[in-house]
Length: 168
Image 1 (cartoon, rainbow, N blue to C red):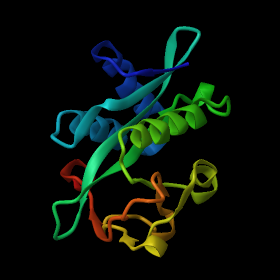
Image 2 (cartoon, rainbow, N blue to C red; image 1 turned 90 degrees about the vertical axis):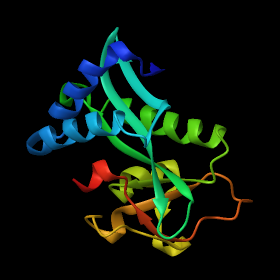
Image 3 (cartoon, rainbow, N blue to C red; image 1 turned 180 degrees about the vertical axis):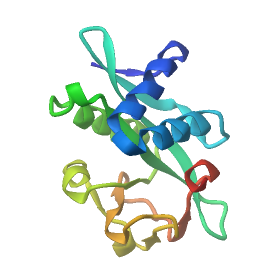
């Protein structure tokens, strides 16, 4: 079951990311905490996955912007599921919840930096092919992707700038 994250969920959320990301877990847990405390956090777009009453996964969507403009764009990141609960559809349900919620807000696009084989199932494609260039901190150009949520909208163009928590 997917639910909106609430205040009481945050200790479990931090631990989920710490465990889900292995050697990078402490960095991702720090990122989640910094994003939550920043102006870039969007509380209505943070979701948890529950399995038999236990929180086993989390995803958040936060704001970035297009360089040289006032245009803001949402990014799905990070998404984590406890290792013992991976492969059961929790991550897919969280990704779908993010895409659906961001679309419902009327946003034209949603960004992600991740595995194209995984995120392609949710409508993500290479962002640079649509005029959205990855920020310098992106690990791989091919992993920087966008889901077009409103095909009738004028899509933002230019280099994406990650919010400060992503660049620390």
